[in-house]
Image (cartoon, rainbow, N blue to C red; front, top):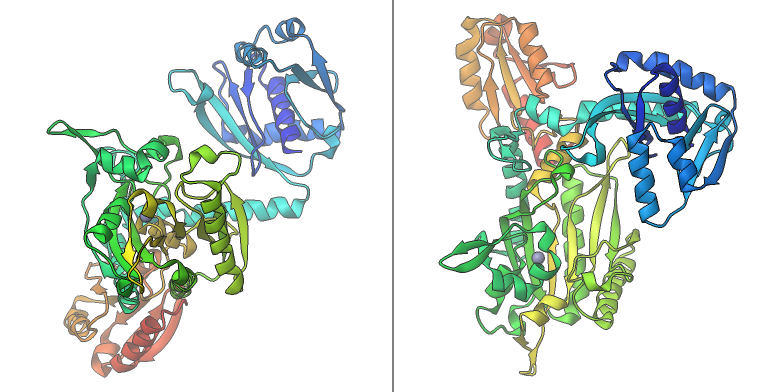
Length: 572
Ligand code: ZN
């Protein structure tokens, strides 16, 4: 239906803009788009009502959409005025595919593999959404085309819901909020996908790190620190050089040896394990690190903080005996769930990511080890009665994994952390430990990062909360707003009383209304308005984010309220 709506757009455009050349366009997961070469004609979003009206005419006429297979010479004749179509046609011919066209009514025909609805009347409610420039084949050396995006749904209700979702998503876009709330920026002077986290963003990350560190310490994790580069030979041993290379940067030469910037920490943590002979008494051994890693994501796939080229993980590697594997996995799953509960993330599901059985060359190890690893993870999930779903082809190259997938209030899904099981790297690095009977055995390795990367987490939480972070995470928790200069002394003494809270004072010579409005825009959880009455009675006039007036409180009352809200990590 969306594909057919795209043809109707194309047909309407040809009628309204004679001489325009249609390049190509697909249906997408959420709608459709089409690229046009307007050949000097101006097209903008203000033209949408006109274009939509024309589209509606075509839909109302309920024109039949008919598939035809034609010869290449016939097709070449049909599209002789359109170099884009001719190029397309050549590609089809080269691939040995057939020339297929779809005709809508009598006046319109396009090169297309289909499928389509049988007539235009079957196309549901649609809407044109936006217009953008796009290079032909995404190649900046090729001509710039005009891309029109639209969508279409079976019912008006679904379309409405989608449009609402889009509007909400725009308001929550972490790239815009990141700028407005001064959380981070990405500078061309640094390079694409390499964000700089500003003090407010760094505060949120630091608070989460402190919290994460405390939990992990209580579970016996030990922190280590490892370098950002390592010899290429190390990455050959680990298999990264063979199987993860497209995400790695080119080697750099240091004194004639090749070094690689790390995309993961595993080889370093593995060497830390191998540093001395290990006994079963030390297992499970848990090495943790807040480590930056670098991945060469394609520039077209970079997206604010959600897809970056440099990221800091809450990484750890657990080395354990095979018999303890289940309890280790359960402990990690518990740790993930504790984190999400405290971050206010309620709706998530576990995805069991397996090897793609069709593409075994993309992975290390043999069938038997994979079967063993995949079954071990599935068993751990089943026995813990955790809901999960399977995803073939999503495994790491060294083993299967459990990936928590979070759903936000708009129904969008985000992968947040990961728990990975690995029989391969202990083998490749020849790891061992002395078991209870004095024999040498091979440990099993669990790679895990409950939060994934801190950059991505900051992006996800910003969208999740629309920038209104819960009190324990808010970069500024309380803003004191003195009404006039004479209230400043009281404001300052109040700030010193609110120890352990992140408090600032809006000292500017602006009206109270303006200061409140800006504090609201900055999504600061609490505002204390200080005027004559507050100074003389030593009371606080408290406002809560979201234009809620909480009335008068004593300093102690206010302090206790916030302390509870922080300790309980409440989401209000
Ligand atoms: Zn790892």
